[in-house]
Image (cartoon, rainbow, N blue to C red):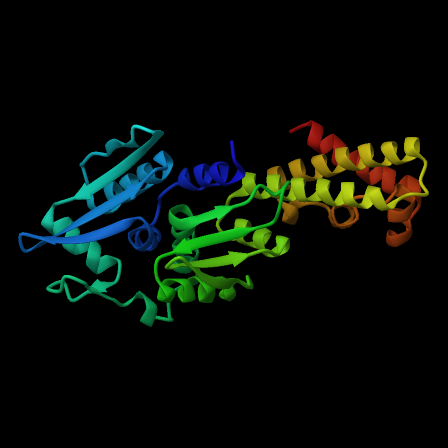
Amino acid sequence: MAFSTELKNELSRREIVEKDSAISELSAFIRTNGTIVFSNFAFIIRFETTNNSIIRRIFKLFKFLYSYDGKIIVSKISNLRKNNVYKIVIEDEEISKKFLEDTFFSDLDSLFPKDNLYEDSAKSRNFIKNFLCGIFLGAGSIANPDRSYHLEFTLNSNELAKLVIKYLKLFGIKAKSLEKKGQYIVYVKDSAMISDFLSLIGTVNSLFKFEETKMIKEIKNNTNRLTNCETANLDKTLNTAFAQIDAINKVYKRYGKKNLDKNLLELCELRLKNPTFSLKELAGILKISKSGVNHRFKKIMDMANKI
């Protein structure tokens, strides 16, 4: 399964617990996967996607906020393709009106409601975080990290593209944009900032997979430059480093950084930043003995083995 698909599946499974967070996410979906139709003096809300997990997410959000009890419509794109198209059509006038008000569409007598979301710069960071979650689910993609580092959002308006760039910048993530065939592409190519984005939206499993793949790539790239090392010793060092990095990721995921002993955390961070360093080199930086480094790693490995 593609990394981007796994990421969206993980993001779609997040628990829905707060009204404001749900509204924030739907505010993104209506701007990426939704259309607003005015028919018989009433608004009809439609959502459409080829991703089953996304349409189920939208359905759950509507049910959570408005006790929506509709259905998901499934159809084929064409006879030539196997992809399904999933749709939700909200025809209930009260739900549609309340939804448009909640998601910052005003002037409900107009066929093209005014969008106030872009004018309000006082949104909370939690609102922005969940909005970015919805934007990624509805219009985002990320390359497999073993090939390249590339995060992008394909948006249908320049205003929305500017808003996404602004919101990402609030969290220290610098994005660029370009226009292509009438669409606006917001993209990030810096691997550290992509990691920050995955951390921001709370996809722990995908973040660890991204970091692990990134680490392996860096190790492989570094090994190509180590022409003066003996093959046997190099293999041993790398195999040990791989095992230590895997153990560190398991310990971080299970216990969190804050709950680790200060000395163990210092060594973990140093190993992650220097995956090709030998125990002797790590000991030199920490200014302790090689056996001291080995003893700390033994504790980390023991913790990981108990998980």
